[in-house]
Amino acid sequence: MGAMNTARNVGYVLGVLVLLIDLAKGALATYLGLQLADFTGALAAGIGVVLGHAYSVFVRFRGGKGLATALGVSLPLYPLGGLAALVLLLVFIALFRNTNRASVVLAVLYPFLVTYITYLTGSGLSLQLLFIGVLIIAVIIFIKHIPDLRKRA
Image (cartoon, rainbow, N blue to C red; front, side, top):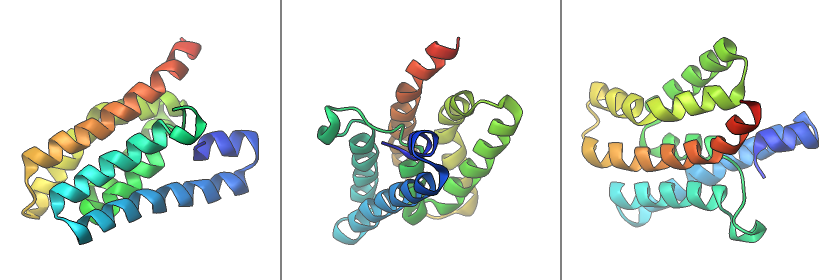
């Protein structure tokens, strides 16, 4: 369940395939939310797809950590914010040499980063609503990383 777990346990080729599927899942859910509703509906769909990925009913409410799915959510809604988060994640991984720590730090910064970049681009999106929605996504990601941080502490 999730790209990193698949890469570690089954191999990097399948890990990349799962990464692409998780990205597509997040992007598709959000895109459909935009087509069927509006920004609010798309953001709700994005939260739902990340929540469903992290706590899948198909595996007794366990699942992945939601990073790739969250990046997929960003593509139709706030692509520059998502791209900036991806770059920042890679920088944190290089600095910390620990993907869990890097992911947690990114999750803390994610709502602020996305909202600020969206503000700078003047996209006309509701910044308050965007911040709340991205904050919920970040909290899900943060919570999913806590057990791994405890293992390594």
